[in-house]
Image 1 (cartoon, rainbow, N blue to C red):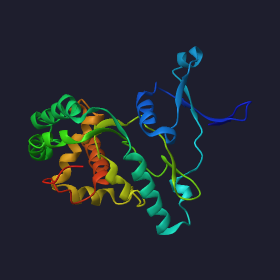
Image 2 (cartoon, rainbow, N blue to C red):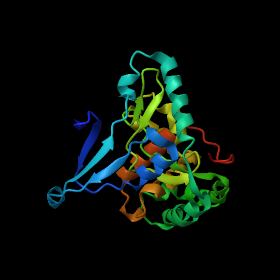
Image 3 (cartoon, rainbow, N blue to C red):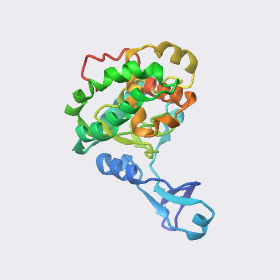
Image 4 (cartoon, rainbow, N blue to C red):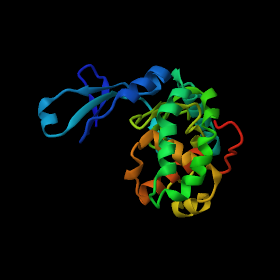
Length: 251
């Protein structure tokens, strides 16, 4: 909800049925600056008693990609992609990838390898292979990875330059580059042909990336069901694309 204050400043008010972790927003804003909205909780005991939490965010100018790109043609899409890549590639944070790999990604892969769940077993061979390659990622710097890049979370101006990126609540600190390849596929209709996409990638080596991305969002592998696994598989496909070379540096 867009609200105009007495001083004519516009802010976005959002009501949620659960508390929002605003930590990732703060990390992203510190790393990337004003393209990430500032966000704060509006403390209201009556609303919270009703299990409603209110947040305000500053209003970032621009239109969502889905609307702003209309009529711009291929050149507009190229401009947006370049702009988005330049912005997100600056998202370095303090720390190193080794800690994330050893404390989060490696334990999760080990759980995937050892689970008896039938939905996971087709992925266990690549999980085991990837366990042996995790150390290669430790040379990469740590950065804030937006896990939900899509055509309504990216704002653009009249020149097709990115003016803002919103919805950082699913973001994680990961080795540099994870998720950036999704930029090249954003212009496509990412919801089209999900079934055929999953069929194509079923036996591809890069499915190991499913496992590393799921580590950022799911720590309880036994809670996975087949639908969730397919969803993560799809997210990874549009994040990294076909033909990942597992023998090359994984960025």
